[in-house]
Image (cartoon, rainbow, N blue to C red; front, side, top):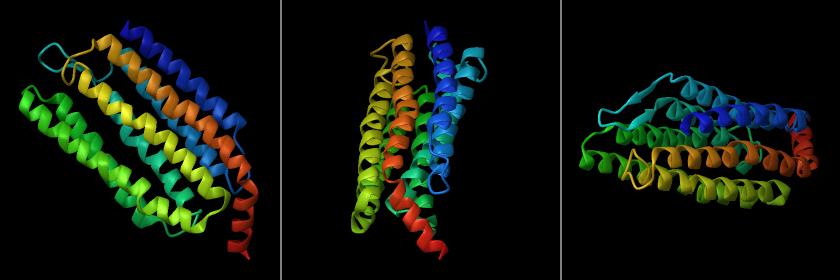
Length: 235
């Protein structure tokens, strides 16, 4: 069951990556977003291929399977998606370094502590690392809906609407990941390994492929505003 889901994940991410790039805008104002949205499922496809082939898929020591490429996927793809959100929130302002470092740092801590939780054989240690990962996760949400949303709202316009919708879509989907993790074999073991793999596959398709397409379409509607801002910066 798991191998079928992993193979479907590889195919879905590969096709999704090509589709997002083919249909995305290539204008100078938007193409970096198109490239990011296409790269995310391409990285995910690599991770699914690795998991399907059994590369860095290992037994934790108690019969629970650890899919290490999944965490490698997240450590690369989520910062890319977050960087795109930061660029939108600041309306493509060139001075974005502080926000990106803060939110990407929290995100990396969340994923790494999640991996430590999944690797822990002791239940108490596993819970501690999971809760600390959730603290970092809350920090990411604070950045998205606190200072970044406020900056985006202060600029207003079509780009703020795109930011609000993109952030909302990602926030809802990302919120389900820790629930699946907690219920899966790495956590409480309430659901089976197969159910966990299939659930994460569905979430990945929504968060990486479906999001890439919908975010691209929203950006196309805001393209005149982006082009105008770019022209003013270059003037």
